[in-house]
Length: 504
Ligand SMILES: Cc1cc2nc3c(=O)[nH]c(=O)nc-3n(C[C@H](O)[C@H](O)[C@H](O)COP(=O)(O)OP(=O)(O)OC[C@H]3O[C@@H](n4cnc5c(N)ncnc54)[C@H](O)[C@@H]3O)c2cc1C
Image 1 (cartoon, rainbow, N blue to C red):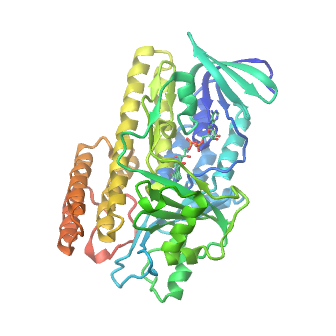
Image 2 (cartoon, protein in one colour):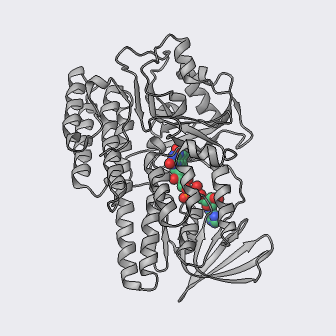
Image 3 (cartoon, rainbow, N blue to C red):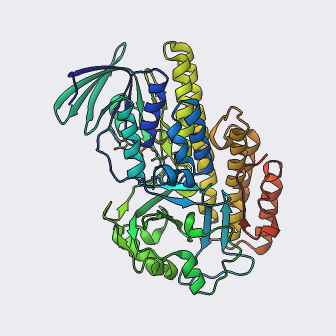
C-alpha cells in the first residue's frame, strides 16, 4: 500500500515491461527520483523474446556505464546459465530460414537453395538468447524494488493533467492515488495510454509492411533438425543447430517463428500478410488450421505439440504496424515500443528499445531542467525513432515481397544483415551509436530505397526469371560491398554464414 495518497517524483514511468524497468533502474542510478506504474502484475506472459548481438552489446555497455553489473550476465547464454539458471531462456546462435512451398514437404539441395543460416556467435556459451519474458520482466521488477524505486502494480492511470508538473490520477488496489511527477515516460508498449493522456494518436497509415500474427507457447514441438535428419536432408555443414536459433520457416504469405527455451517450451507463431485473401474473415483457429493444411512439414512440426499453461491459448493480433504521431511533448516522451512497431522478422524490438532508452536517458540527464535544450534533444530523439522505423519497414516489407522466391529473399535480407553489422561496428568501436541500424547513414538508406524499387520491378512480372534473380543478387552484392565485412552473398558460402557479428 502506498505510504501516502499523494506521491512526488521527478519521473513517472508507465509500464513495467523489460524496457520500463531498465529505464527506471538507469535513471534511479543517475539520481532521479523515479516511480514505475504497471497496470498488470508480474509474472505475466509477454511476447518479444529473441535477443540479438546488438541488444547484448548494449546490455554490457549499460552494465558498466550505469553501474548495473548484474545485467552483464544476461548478455550471453553461458553467463546467464551460471548466474541465473532459474530464469528461463534459450540458446540463440543466429537466424535460420527454411523455405516451404504449399502442398509440398520441405526439400533443398547441396547448395542449400531453400536454407539460409546466419550465425551470430561462435559457440553456445557466447550465444545470444531467447528470453522467457515472463521470467526476465519479473526479475527486472524485483531489481526495481530492490533498488528502492517506488513500484505500483495493478495500478491504472485514469487521467492526468499538466501545469508546471504532471498530476496523475490513479486507481490502485487500495483505492485512489495521486502521483505528481515532472516528466512522464510512456513504456506501455502501445499508444492507448499516450492517447488518453496527451491526445497523441497512433496509426498504421505510413507503413509498407502489412502483417498480423497468431501465436502461443507450446510443449512438444518437434526439433526441426531431427525432422531434417529423418528426411535424409544433410545438416553437417550447418554452422550451428538451427533449433538453437531464431528459427524461421518461410512461407509464401508470411513466416513462422520458432524460439526454443531450455525448459522444453517453444514460442511458435505465424506472421502473415494481411493481404492474404484466403485468410480473410477466418477465426484464429481457422487460420491456424488453414496454414497447417497448406504446409505439410509445418503440420508435422506441431503434431505432438500441446499448449503451454501460459498463455494457454492461441492469440491473434491486429495489424502489427503502428506509429505514434509524436514521440515527445511538454514533459513527456515515449520509449521505442510505444513509439511504434513494424514486425518481428529480424527480432530487432529488444535492441531497438535499449538503443532508445540509452538516448533518452542521456537527454534527460543532460537537460532535465533546461527546457530549450531538452526540447532540441527530444526532437532529435523523435527524428531518430521515426527514421529507424522507416528503415525497418522498408527492409521488412522487401522480405515479405520476396518470400515466395527464396533466392530473392536471401539476396534482399543481406541488406538487413549488412546494416546490422555496420551498426554493430559502431558499437564495438565505442563510437556514438547514432541511429539504430545506421538509419542515419545516407549510403545505407539510399541502397535500401533503390533496391526496394528494383525488387518491385522484378516482382511486377508474373514470374521473375532466373536471370532477373541473378542480376538482383549481383546488384545487392555490389551495393553492400562498402559495408560488407562478413562475406555476405559470397557464393562459396552457399547460404551458410559461420560468423557474421561485427569484427574490425
Ligand atoms: C508478435 C511480436 C513478436 C515480437 N518478437 C520479438 C523478438 O523476437 N525479438 C525482439 O527483440 N522483439 C520482438 N518484439 C518486440 C518486443 O515485443 C518489444 O520490443 C518489447 O516487448 C518492448 O518491451 P517494452 O517493455 O517496451 O514493452 P512491453 O513488453 O509491451 O511491456 C509494456 C508493459 O506496460 C504495461 N502496460 C500497458 N499498458 C499500461 C498502462 N496503461 N498503464 C500501465 N502499464 C501498462 C504492460 O502490462 C506491460 O507490462 C515482438 C513484438 C511482437 C508484437
